[in-house]
Length: 69
Image (cartoon, rainbow, N blue to C red):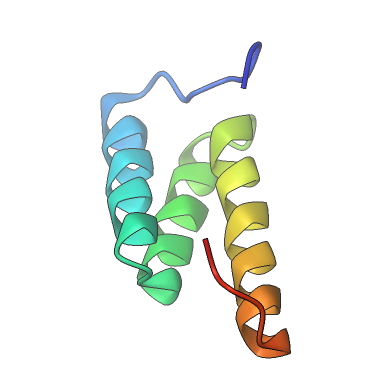
């Protein structure tokens, strides 16, 4: 997403990237925990916020029986 903010702290960035990898593995709970940790370090991390929204969207699709992407 153009103009998005990724946290500047290296630990925060590592949490974001770990969350991203976990999303790719569809390990939603673990990914969500990493994004929340990243947001605790940097509440302005819009990429982590967007990923949490994506996880919620995927969970809603799974619950309704739609294909999860």
